[in-house]
Amino acid sequence: MRDRLSALGLDSIAELTHFACTSEDINSASYALTVKRAVEEVWLPALDVVIAKLRELAAEHADAAMLSRTHGQPATPSTMGKEIAVFAWRLERVRAQIAASDYLAKFSGATGTWSAHLSADPDADWPTISREYIEGLGLGFNLLTTQIESHDWQVELYDRVRHAGGILHNLATDIWTYISLGYFAQIPVAGATGSSTMPHKINPIRFENAEANLEISGALLASLGQTLVTSRLQRDLTDSTTQRNIGVAFGHSLLAIDNLRRGLNAISLSRDVLLADLDVNWEVLAEAIQTVIRAEVVAGRSSITDPYALLKELTRGHRVGAADLAAFVEGLEIGDAAKQRLLALTPASYTGIAEQLAK
Image (tube, rainbow, N blue to C red; front, side, top):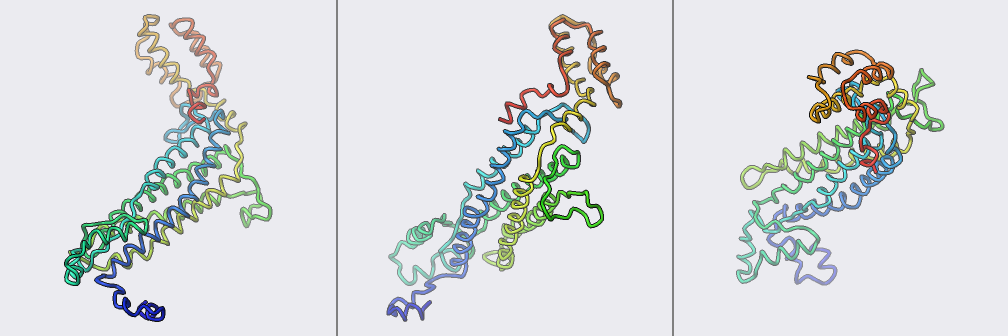
């Protein structure tokens, strides 16, 4: 840089190159600028595409009643749109935190004291000069540091990106499971091979690929956060090696996001499968029945004791059909209006306000 300044006829200031700086004064600003641009110009826009697709699917399938599976067992129905909306909601919240991240740098010399600066010019307001320079780069200024900028902003950011990756990983495993249940059909891609031995297969490789890349990214981001939060006394070089993997961590995350985008664009909801699944799980209405009984007891229209035990005996561990439940409800000591509400209920209509939530 001194040679370049000299070539421009600026020999008089060439010796000010790296004036009073330690390497971290340069590196902290460089890393902050690099990571800031990577997040704001590449990573967040990629995430936004996935969030937008989830919002689209949530609205499209808002009314698609489906059997829930808490602990993997048949449970109170929801809609596919509402379940997808949950992921959009979660990602938007973490995205807002990431978008509000700080990106900090130092510019205060060998141990953060401006000692050399003051020796050269004791009358200059070096903290103000340094702040104006760093903030002029679009970064935040860290006033109080050791030889290094303390990297806490990086730890915060990588934890949030890892958190977003965990939500995306959950999305990948859930969509994979819905595909395995037949809830989603995969749209065939011309020329693609699902299996070397089973021609019929369309493997959910986009979601599996996303899973693996998110796990690698998450492990690297966790390691970055764990290492960068500590520096022995005023300086050690563990951060130097560690920070060279920031791009690798974001790279694997971007691969995962791209695979999720492509995967979400290649699935089609099989509403007939969802309805068929609901139709063989009428026992999920046991929750509604025992809750209505409780309300009727409080209102003085029933004297049934322990409705939970009553429904548990009827439904636990075996299938109960529409006729079985109808006969059971007909025999209950409850008000006529409540009885008619229960008789009109089906698994497909027992979705509460899921459709409104999805929209």
